[in-house]
Image (cartoon, rainbow, N blue to C red; front, top):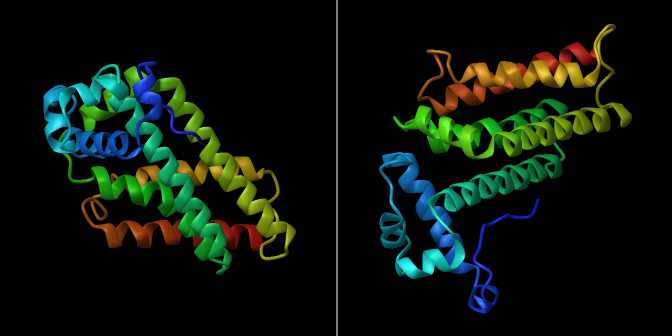
Length: 209
């Protein structure tokens, strides 16, 4: 997935190194998480990224563009983690757990302790509702492909009668999403890992019957 950044079309921006845009994106992610979207300014982002304010505007038209670039950065991170889980060559349960953790674990690490998460979710929805929908669809498609690959190699069986792989994946993702709000999980990374593994065990067991 390419990183889509809203950039001013200048000769300088084309020739610039990716180091500064990446520093701006990471600075924005940290500031939005700690202080919220509304309270974070371009000046704040420039200071945190250790660049001039004009450098931010060289690569991003406004604060919303930085926020959208963060979404693409996170999407790329999820893809990298998913690829690593698929390359691990471990058991079906381990692989599915790794794929779940690639998305839900990363989000937990970044946002579970942020008091501004409701505002960030609202901002994501306002600025990129369609894009988020596309990314969620891509993630579920990847989970489905992984399960079918495991089925093809004989590592697992097929879906139970009356269900499709897509339906199983959809229910799995909803269950993993709900795990974040379980009082026994909130704020506890290890507890989330255990819950994701339990969900993976449940799905693989159902497909092996």
